[in-house]
Amino acid sequence: MKKSQVNVKGICFTGIMAALVFVFTFTFKIPLGNGYTHLGDAFIFLSAYLLGGKRATFAAGLGGALADLAGGYTMWIAPTFIAKFLMAGVCCLVAELIFKRSLLGYAVGAVAGAIVHIGAYSLAWFLLFDKAAMISAFPALTLQTVVGVVVAAVFVAVFRKTGTDNKLRAMAGFEKKEKKAEAASEGK
Image 1 (cartoon, rainbow, N blue to C red):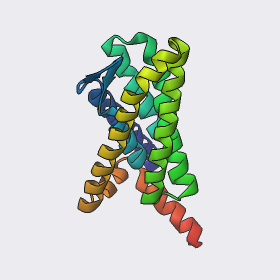
Image 2: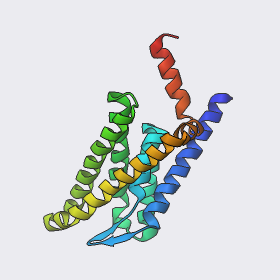
Image 3: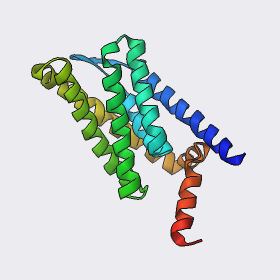
Image 4: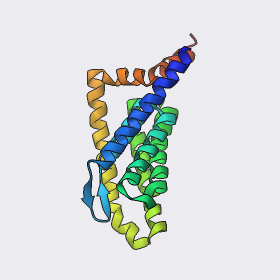
């Protein structure tokens, strides 16, 4: 019974993070060049920190893709899902597997995820349009991604200072997994 409660909590929190990605992508648009920039990426990186890899990837992809659907950017739904999914996935892989969920790991992971995100979207621009469109979209895409990393870092810093990160991670069912992993590594 308890395991299903944790799963329901995790699913609900994943849905909340997907909704935040959607809201901050769809609502707070800043028009730039070929499209717009937004704060949704910050919530993707925050999802990676709070939820972990399996859940964050779906929150990222789903939230971003739904924003494109609601905004009428239907040709971007699949590329957005893939780019956001990969961005969160790479961030979590680096943070969780290489750096064992340390704060430095999430910082390095966010940079790695940002690079993958920019690469994936650049490829999409090239495939959907041409090289000129890809090049013209690159500065706005880079700015959007960098702002997302910085805003997420501010949220993480505030959350860590206030202890909110532990409460949110516990709500998501993530902390219990970390404690079990620590206990297993210590031989308890």
